[in-house]
Image 1: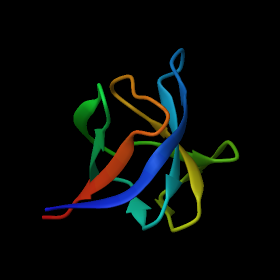
Image 2: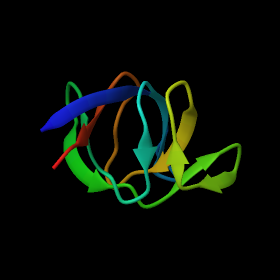
Image 3: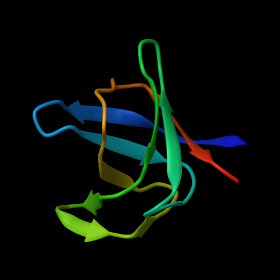
Length: 83
């Protein structure tokens, strides 16, 4: 099952990092889907940062930088896979 937890506000292609605006909790090792007009991939959360500080858990209202495995776009949706 997938639950929407936010969207992408920025993407930095040179370092393959997306900035997420979240409406729900996200933890290291969670599996997520990033989906949009030309984007659709699944990945495990392996590295997150807020203000250049590594974090292991973030919550609603946080803007977090996430290392991604494929390019994505501003406005793409993020879904957490709940098993």
